[in-house]
Length: 123
Image 1 (cartoon, rainbow, N blue to C red):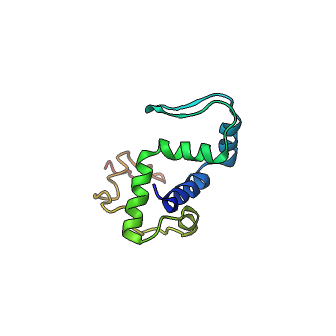
Image 2 (image 1 turned 60 degrees about the horizontal axis):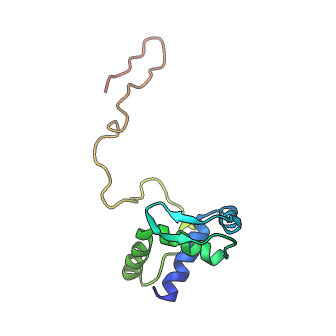
């Protein structure tokens, strides 16, 4: 893994995890083991911030590939802080293949009607 990718992943993990969580793992005297890969371990005893962040990166295996794919498409690694600063408005497509169907498709339950003679349609 090149240094630019490693730095981008470290920034991402640091921004997406609470500082208290990282510090808690640093101070935890026990060993940490990846639940999906017993060979991936963080040693017992005090740990540096860098060791904890690198361990968290290793747990999210698909994250490295996503960063590589993003870099290939955009020429730079994603910047989580910059990405979170951009507002998303109603109507902006955030998925390549959004679900199709009527507005009622996602709400199969009947709608409550207001008034004395109101009628609630049964979708």
